[in-house]
Length: 488
Image (cartoon, rainbow, N blue to C red; front, side, top):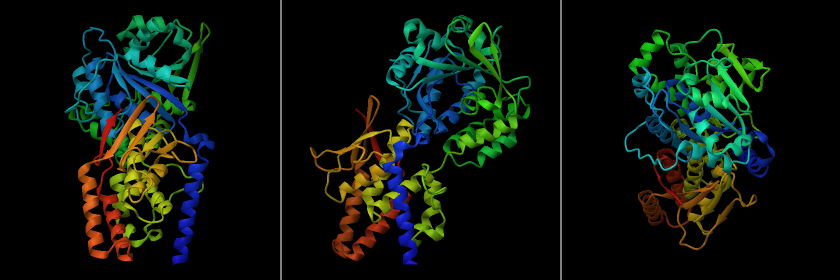
């Protein structure tokens, strides 16, 4: 049996080394699409936004709100609540201008949709939508797609100030029923903006429902309910609203803006029409809605480990796991997700024992990735954990969870301060500090002190005690709760 476990250990180490050392050679580790979301915050926008946030192929650079189903300020509260739900507070957001039109008849319905907990949300309105679009374009080196699920107001206002930046937008994907001649709710909400943009040379893909609209139905929501990802669960939870249930039963709720992320990721599921007078513009209508439902489920089923290079699936069979961990494995996965399961498991193998601070480092690095909603190998890190165990063991967890390694030169360790469980994570122009809360650090120090008093320091019994503590912390401590977050 020991030989079997040694083999498993070496396999896991190989996977870790390949993932970390050669990660930058694999294009599928990086986002393919770099997207600004512009939304008027209708129910279908919620579903579409969840899909865009869930997909590893999409990096959401920013979210702006427009006037439509909700006014921009109301929408911004919804967006903020949604990002807090997922731990993606690092994605910037801003509101556009209110059009002062008569609110649509469905505004009350849109206001009733639960995007997240709206209590204790403080919105900073200093940056408006067009300024956020400008800064996002200036910061991003890759081609940018702007996904518009509402009127074209914010894009119009951006272009009025930044006509010279028009070529920096690779394309706009806009949900609207028809163009040339243009008609549809999103067009009518701001005709002036739409007419202006449709006469520019920007590449525009217009998404339409096609000849027959397809209803969101109970079977579809039941299928989403079986998916464990927070994005799928948010859609299911928000659609338990009594008004939505009634609209589903009456077949009023359709796949509208939901089609935008599907087109971005699976354009072959659409029929396309081009316009001779407007060669940069096309309209795309949905065809096989059953296949579209399957793709939505595929996108939202994202509670998975970071992709392995060697194995098709990371071990999660209890018979392959040491008994003391195996008995908690399902609880750990259920509470923290498969991604954390893989990262902490690899950290323990790399670290050569089940260590407390290495697990804290793994949770910390994953929390930072979650905050910015980025994949592996996107962050630069400064660790305050020093070079002396046990606190320095935090560094091993940071490397495994983020892909920021000493070999890549993307992690450094500062010795300017007393060692502590803290690290700075930089992404583009933002630096996030994560610090283990004092109450959790005191629990660790007190528990370890008791272990030394009871078993002696560094004895076999001591290491077994540390292992038991580490498993306990791994299971019980939520990465969303144990750290203080500070923006530098």
